[in-house]
Amino acid sequence: MSTLAGTLGIKPSRRSYTSKVFIYALLIAWSCTTILPLIWVLLNSFKSSEEILTNAFGLPEAYRFINYVKLNEYGNINMMKGFLNSLIISGSVVLGVAFVAGLASFVLSRFQFVGKQLFHVLFVVCMLLPQFAVIIPNFIIIKELGLNGTYLSVILPQIAGNLSFAIIMMTGFMSSLPAELEEAAVVDGASIMKIYYRIIIPLCIPIFSTVSIMIFLWSYNELLMPLVYLPIRDMQPISVLLSLVSNAYGTDYGAMMAAIAISILPLLVLYMISQETVIKGLTAGAVKG
Amino acid sequence: MNFKDKRYIVLFLAPTVILLFAFLLYPLLQSVYYSFTDWYNFSNEKTFIGLDNYKQLIEDPVVGIALRNTLILTLGAIVLQAGGGLALALLTDSVKRGFKFFRTVFFFPIVISGTAIGLMFSIIYNYDYGLLNAIMRTFGIPEQVWLTENSSIYLVLIPILWQYVGFYFVIFLTGMSKIPEDIYESAQLDGITGLQKAFKITIPLLRDVIASCLTLATAGALKVFDVVYIVTKGGPMNSSELLSTYMYDKAFNGQNVGYASTIVITMMLLGVMITVLLNKAVKKDTISY
Image 1: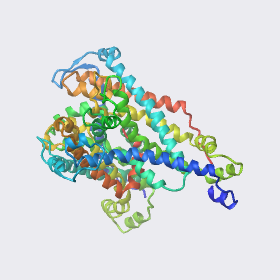
Image 2: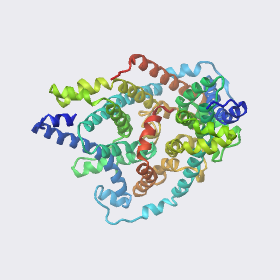
Image 3: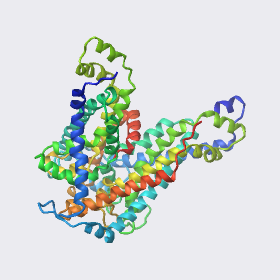
Image 4: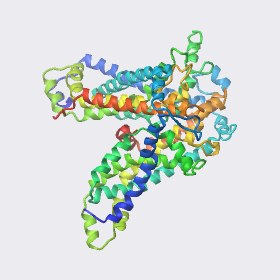
């Protein structure tokens, strides 16, 4: 619109200049509400509790990593172990969803069979189903399957919970792929397995990575499920440990800040390298229960 | 390509179907059944008591508080989250520079877990070490206990709202980018001002987006758990209780799991009801340009 105004020679007035400044001021102010608390956490993570009390806003006297070192062993809360557990759990969930949803999406986008429509309804219903709806019965099911006290007790329900979203996204992507390559492969006598692994998967790398990033984020941030299903301290992911920190650390606020900072760090890195994917994926996945 | 081999259809869909039935659909039925039982602390004894739990639920004062809090959250989400997102999007849309920066910053809190944000805000509200009281000290105002029975729900509302403003911001911005430029160009020739542009053109044309945001905001308010669990655990004196935190408390602190299931079913019914009502209220005749 400005281009046309420009070519017509309409000059920006003084009023529009002041309103621009005002708009930028508002936008920057809101940015500060996001950035400042995070910086506050980061700066205070280098201070001792006494220093936080006397010098709440300023730069720390010295950049000591003592608070971060402490995270390695604080009572029975080991943040580093928590990272490893998060990696095991969320990594398995991502791989599990990619494997199971990939196969299902392949069938839904490339096979013709009666009742296909029914599956679409099933996936939409399952995607909208909030996880708290099944948190109590799954507790019993996990026990009956003999999974309590294992990583699988949180991995399997999380795979199930994320499957529908993944299948809906992947089926949409696969259906839009041209079929010529597969037709040629069929003529050459390739088996269905071979078509899936040699043609479909390589073409679907973009959607696999989008879905994987989203599911990793959700799983890494998930609190309720591991809190309820994984009572063993040594196996708990970072989200559960973080929820215990305020009771366990007492008044050691420096260490608490360090715990927050270090739990955010992997997300910040992921966000920085795949920002477009994360923003698109999270807005698309907002309806997920 | 249309394959028809039945063996592959069954083989590839089986893992999905098994997982969805085992961890979502069968447990959902279980939840409904549990809601009609008296069942303490996951013991082996369940007594079928018909609608007694539902009767108790209607008379439960804490459920009343939780519903009131959910309403506050929903209104806050609609007015401040979606409204704030819309305002920020309109502002960003009206300036040329910095769009990418603002989007990156505004969206980042959504990537962080509710646990980390909750812990951060519980430190901000802390009496001795908190950011708020540090600010009070700097200005020589007496320190305050922030989390009280009257204030708790509003104080947990702040991090929740703060976290998701960026989400609505991105959705509205995407919607605005789809409005064709020539509409604005012709309006500009007629001498329209910035504010008129927003209220007479952009907002009316975004009606569909606004409608879906309303649904998302309402559904989202019912799903809140992490932040409240971390900051207040529903307290003090149940004042910031939500149905989700109350359900957690009833189910996993050795109380009546049957009653907790009743709360779960109520949450689901509420969610479905609100979504249907909202969809009816905002009739969707799509805008075409």
